[in-house]
Image 1 (cartoon, rainbow, N blue to C red):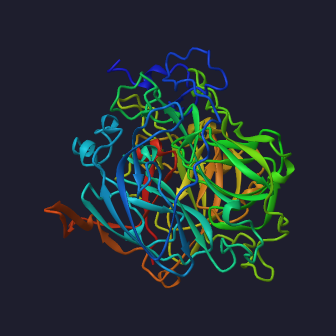
Image 2: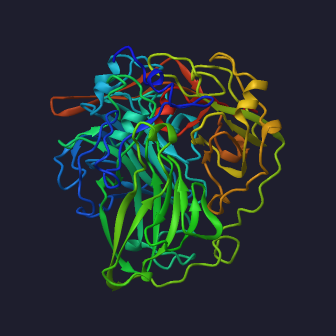
Length: 595
């Protein structure tokens, strides 16, 4: 097996231009007896036997957070297994609360002693070596933060064990649900899956997070943060980053569908809720899957915000589609339930077709809510969230772009070991043929997805508006504009090959976003404003050292700190697919905003 890539094995069953070789696990609750010899399964586990963990909270202008090795039990019937975590947690990190206009300084240290997935490090990926198995590289990124480039978690600005630095987040943007996670080059999927992720809530004078807030939103115990993930676990409690024996350990796999749903670090937990309105802050922190989320009884709910903050008005719906990296802010009325009644938060999106062909089925559920007899928050769902008295300004119309650029998502079809990479613009990460939008300019990006899989595309620094999506005839486009060998920029014009009218954004996509689902064989159009240095109050095009921080030596009962600096300098930000396996190899590029 060591000379056979999964790409080669699946060549006959994963058809289509740029077909991705992605496999997944099985949802044991759906069809536990179906044999799947190509997949690693989780053991059969009873759902709803663990209480939903309430994540610890951290607030203040000056914080200390370490990345640490830990052990954690994901289910009542599983022993603790090795994990990574932030702070004092055994998995994930605390909910950090920040306030608009008040800088948050986080003194960060890498104190990882052993990585749960050391054997899974693929040293053939960009920038990795045997050293990275034991001297684990990390880089903290505030996802959704409008952050100076030196504090943005650039994948090449890393801290190894004993090293760290202070991150400074200005918090000058609207209140929103952000999250922080590791972003180190080519090991992001390993570090985040192991546990390096946490929620970051930015408050302002309108959305205070306190009882009696101007918007009339639930607060306190009626606001819940839910970090959603999917996993494959072993019977001894260890996590598996691998989904199939086809790809040897230590080789990049390309993505895996988990077969159990994990919320705040527990597999299929139960949350007891009062009978009233709740605000649920959801993060898709998965490595791979897009989920179509809805309640098992079909009850309606309201989307009030996405990544960039509140919508102009609540969007009523019975489902919401959420990709890795995206967040959604919901109002759910559990007063619709009788005392003692239960309802599950479920996923109805199927596994990717090529994964299903080798045995994957969709992962069906995340958690169950049980209504208690007590009445909870009984305030109404607001009619509006922006533009009224005591409310922030409206999001308003999407601005007209001054410049339009095409960018592409593809998987080059060469057979290689490790399996074929994923690519932006048909380039590798080290390419210097990057996008360079001008500061102060509104641009439209036409994201051309020439693969049969959805890809969530995330732009660092900026928020954008979704204009809409159109299906394209990918085969005709590629015949007319052939894809060159990897390393030569390829940004095809999809407009002559669209096969349907423009579909506008989903009801929950009408506000500001930082991550967007790009559907298979389609063009997704977004509009972004790239702010100036004066508007940001920092230079987004400043250069900064690749490694500036503090090395910590612990000896004789005290800590010694020494500053060190790498002569190599970095510049700008990155944009990438938030399928973390894709990001690691090589679906990520740098970009700069120039004057």
